Length: 595
Image 1 (cartoon, rainbow, N blue to C red):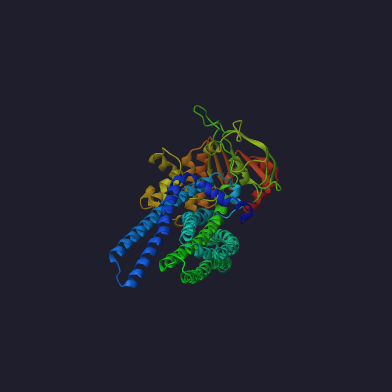
Image 2: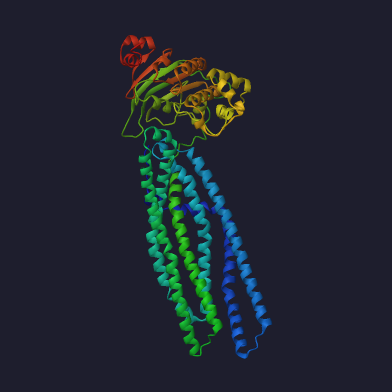
């Protein structure tokens, strides 16, 4: 499987724009949150004026040694109300924004889940499963956590900066100009750190996806790794990616972590400047009091705080942008063509599917520059059992994938009962065919749920008959609870039993046409005989396609298509092909030379 590479330069351009567009349905709640933030800002900015009055009252009373405690208490109550209301508004704003981001991440995960059903199989041929899972989990979480903090923090910071600047100029414009001198330093610092941090955050998200892909591969291939004593090699490979991730995260966090100390240093410089300028103004007889200086120190803190928050918000936006690049990159992937307007052509009420299948000059390649089936034609009559044989890589499974429209053909046509599969919705084609793959697949759930899967209306009596035909009745009844036994881990089921369950699943589907892709590859010879009898019963009266390496399983096929390099080189029944003494005869004799 190939590692998919994300073009960050191209897809990153519209990631923030895509995020903002996705938040449109929540604009009312966001506006309400912003209202609470604005009220909180007004309260924060106005409170130092009362703190200034409190300081001046205490200084005046200390000078005359007669402090008016009632007046001080009244001012203190006003301050308590101000700061209490400020805390409440902040809580409500954060509560609303948290609910918005959680609903957004819930919605984006649903969108991604639907997207996975709409992208063609070719996407998964070129991308690691773990990388795709990382998009659904880590990247969406990163967006949610970052946006939760960034949106409200940015608006709050901007409001606070504007409010504090206005308040400072109203209070003492000379001291306000002193504070303004530090703004260029802060802006330069933010721009430099932003330029250094952003590329690192993007690379970190990409590396995380690749690392998750390696974890997924190591987990699913654990038995193979153990069997070939490749644990040390795989651990070293993972350690390489892990170290790359560690160094990347360290660099990113080191750059981001420098913001707070830098802002703190600049704010201390501002404190000192305010005290010096305020002292000079008091000494020159200007209308500046100790209360004014106290209020300005609070304003400097209020001014420095949103600048730090703005830096943090930019940090969060960088992380969200890096994650959004991958999320929206996946959502922008090419989809299967929309077939919502297509109607069922064969599975209609009153219509009975015969099962005539024809391949007409089919041409296909997984990539345009590498055609693996140049020109394939064949006619299969209804009810025939067609075996497809040939060496590995001859195109046997590819032929079935084209028949199921898992991939679109590049030229020619495939028809079922004279109807082109291009004119039929994929859902109808999948309903027409029952399928047993060489790769067994089970999911967490009861045995009954695994057998019936999406099939409805199958009685226990019918299910029992199916299990007997598939040869798993005894196995199922030995499980605690029988059909209701909950299978939490498919590794507890042998490969042969999983194969039998997937065959029984196809039997329960009871589809008009059947595809068996190496259906007996994971069972022993004795079980193979049982399955073969079940397959004969299952294929009776149905057009069926059987892909097999064990040629003994297809001796009774009505037609055998012998494939080589994407072409049919021979066709006929077993006796005819043996008499021909060609490619099929060589394949067969190589397996049964001693018989």
